[in-house]
Amino acid sequence: MKKLFEKVTLLDRINSLIRTKSTGTPVQLAKKLGCCERAMYDRIEEMRAYGFPIEYDHERKCYYYTKEVKINFSIIVGSQKLMEIKGGRSGRAPLQRYLPLPAS
Image (tube, rainbow, N blue to C red; front, side, top):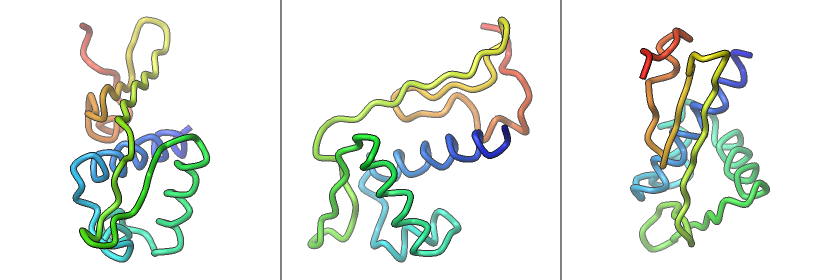
């Protein structure tokens, strides 16, 4: 389950960097994500395979979306919301070590 949370957190981080056009070059993005360049390319290709309209601007040297992208993702167990990402903004930093969100 921890890997799932890590993937969702990584997706949210990449999404945020792309939305704000602050990815930088592929090498810079890999550094921001704390991974090697090959792993970064794999994540971008995986997102594209899921339908994310990601392109690279060679003049600005950054990734961008060709269409608006909104992410809505929640993990709810029973009545407790463990994680929520809406519109690219995370409801909490990496699950604050997997503790439940405060009751809404």
